[in-house]
Amino acid sequence: MKLISAVVPCYNEEAAIPYFYKEICAVADHPRLKAYDFEFLFVNDGSSDGTLALLKKLAAADRRVRYVSFSRNFGKEAAMLAGLTEASGDYVTILDADLQDPPSLIPEMIDYVEVGDETGKCYDCVATRRVDRTGEPPIRSFFARQFYKLMNRISKTDIVDGARDFRFMTRPFVAALLELKEYNRFSKGLFGWVGFETKWIEYENVERVAGETKWNFFKLLLYSFEGITAFSTVPLALSSVAGIVLCMVAFLALIVIIAKTLLWGDPVSGWPSLACIIVFTAGVQLLCTGILGQYLSKTYLEVKGRPVYIIKEKNTGVPGEEPTKN
Ligand code: UDP
Ligand code: MG
Image 1 (cartoon, rainbow, N blue to C red):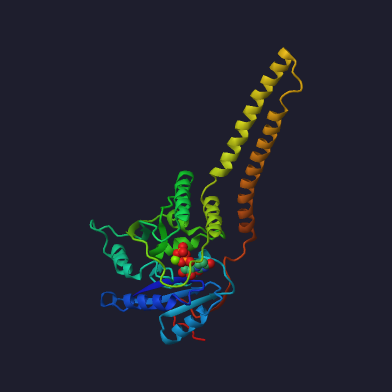
Image 2: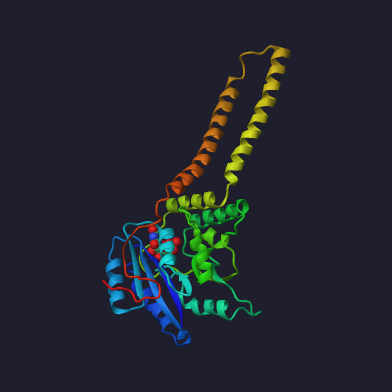
């Protein structure tokens, strides 16, 4: 029997988990999927509400429920990595706890991997993207769109607009992802980077079932910097180009000034333009130093080699073995 691991990152999802659990059980218990075994791997990302207690309760009643609990909040990227690492299934899928990633799509995803599409082509990974952004603040949608446009222009890795982290992956695909040991993880890019055959399926945006979103505008902005620095070095090249262009402009200006002084002898006028030039060049220099700093800081964190997350407790055992209950 093939095992499907459903990885669920949870951060203060006490309100949403009961709905999620009901929904995923309905899928797992459906006669259509009786040939598959399931494990529901919840990753408690340092929740401050009753998430962990709830997970323990579920685990005590259902052997399929496994949990990994972090020592503090490490972020969704860390939670997904922990889930992929701990998952022992032949197939692994990642879903949000808020039901924005409908578990009901899983049977269709299995078909794409095992049976193939209309032409009989089988895939290593089935990914989802939402076709609309209803229910999202317009300003957030606008910046999100611009981010994807920019990313695809400056990065070789394809990063799909509206792509969710909701995926169904085969074991070789997961193994490839786990090979990537980087500390600054931007999964939306990593999924594309590892390659393999990916089938994209689309669905309409669903609003979260309960609880609140964990992302604010500032957090998303920082996350987008992460994406840019992790998948493109174009900003570094741009700052070099800006430096070269400014040098050329300065050189031309120098020639003009010398010629002007020799012809007309005009030593004092022109300080306003000088002030502008100084401020402008100082601004460009700071911008470029800032860009450099972004990459340097990522390298710094990378070099330190700190673990991406720290597990405080878990009930996932050695792959294939029954979980040890506490
Ligand atoms: N999440 C997490 N750690 C965090 C933030 C979020 O594990 O620091 C989880 C959260 O519990 C949820 C998923 O990531 O299952 C997506 O978060 P959310 O629904 O808040 O994001 P949105 O759908 O609004 O983009
Ligand atoms: Mg959500």
